[in-house]
Length: 218
Image 1 (spheres, rainbow, N blue to C red):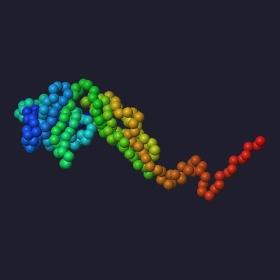
Image 2 (image 1 turned 45 degrees about the horizontal axis):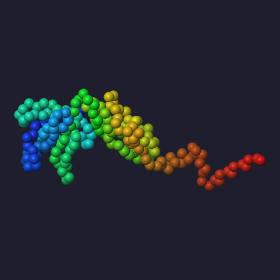
Image 3 (image 1 turned 90 degrees about the vertical axis):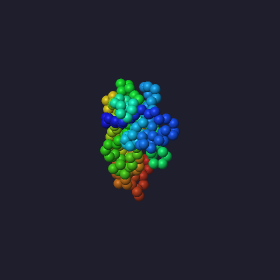
Image 4 (image 1 turned 120 degrees about the vertical axis):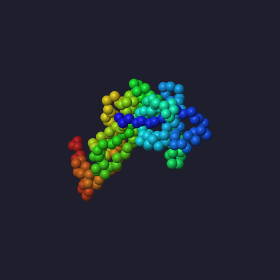
């Protein structure tokens, strides 16, 4: 798993006025919840925005290198992104909530699902629809996978891949309902495929009359 690192400094500036001044210096107010009392901090806007963009709604463990002052020696705090507040226009970062974690205790995390291969149904004119782009899993923070692979090449039109069909790494368990559909192949077969299927099942060809059943002898 890729380690994400973000520098941070304890924050004494509170209140709307102080926070506005803080943002003008290129810093974003944030707070750490979890194992200890909530602690206000500040993080560099540019680096924090990059981290939030890379996360894109999924859970990743972040190492906050937190210092009491800008010149003090930092100490590592392991956290997950909890909530991100942005402006309605432009998605400019306003505030970040982090949740501190114990790396020896399992956590629930959301992980991106990435289809692998080309579904057989797509080759015959179907459309692949991703119903669940992320799945919730339970594992140690250090074992959160960057993504989950979903093999779809065997899926025909009308078939679906469910959570139970996804292969999870060792130590990672699904929390999302295992019967939930992750990927669905919808659509209709091409005309040549329909004709072939009809021939296989002995469909009556156009212009022919079906034979009347022979009456049973009394």
